[in-house]
Image (tube, rainbow, N blue to C red):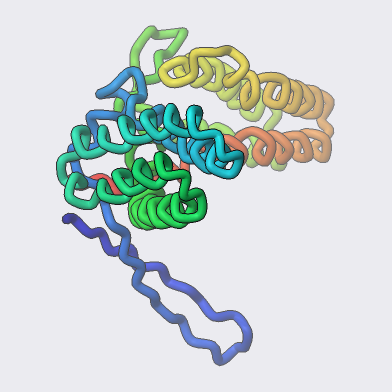
Amino acid sequence: MMRLLLVLAIVAGQSLLAAEQEKTLTLQLPPASLEKWYRPANKHDVWLHTMFRLRREMQAVSEYSALEDQARLEKWLGKLEKDYLSIGRMVPEWRDELETELLDRMRVLARAGDWQGLARAQRKLGKSCQSCHSEYKLTAALRYRAPDFASVKVESEETMDEEDYRRVMSRLSLLLNRVKIAGEDGRQSAALDALEELQQRLADLGNSCAACHKHETARQAILGEAATGSLAHVRKGLEAGNRKQAGRYLGEFAVGVCADCHAIHRLQAGMRRMLTPD
């Protein structure tokens, strides 16, 4: 099983004499066979839906056991068994880790009406599930559910050319700082030109959101009024020669749009790259 070592440098800040310390965190990568059950390889998110069903089935078994409702309990035990065993078929590397004997025991205990024994067996099964989640849930989510911008292209509305996503982001950073620098130094024309291009490139960027988000509300949440409103105030400030207003709303844009989007996407995308073997 592949392991990835992430070295996290933790700087102790309690005193001036505190030295930099390093800690090594070992993360377990899931088997490669798991990938085919996540998007884009699997459009129906079979793995996720199986996990959701298992959680629901475990809850139903617990509730009907407490109610001593044998008929409904048997129904949900059957569903639980079917989905639990499907794990081994989807990810053969995990087949030997499955606690199938606990499922068999739960069936026997349910038929015998041994509710306390059933509850104990279910707790053991739950601990087995939690053990796997503790080891793989984080890395699986980062590798298969975090955004991946490597294949996303941004089309320029002016030239119709497709550009690499990282190149576009670098350009946005350059333009944002150019507006700030030129605005502070009284170079109104240069600041307004940079702002105009910044707004156009943001519009192009917004169109690329559809590569992942199928609803307009997702784009509007970041690049909607929060972006257009702030930049409109920046323009008014620049045109009026009001550097304070321009600087204030440019900062508002950077925090409310750039930083918010990065908090949602960039950190996860970076972790995904780190956890993806070359």
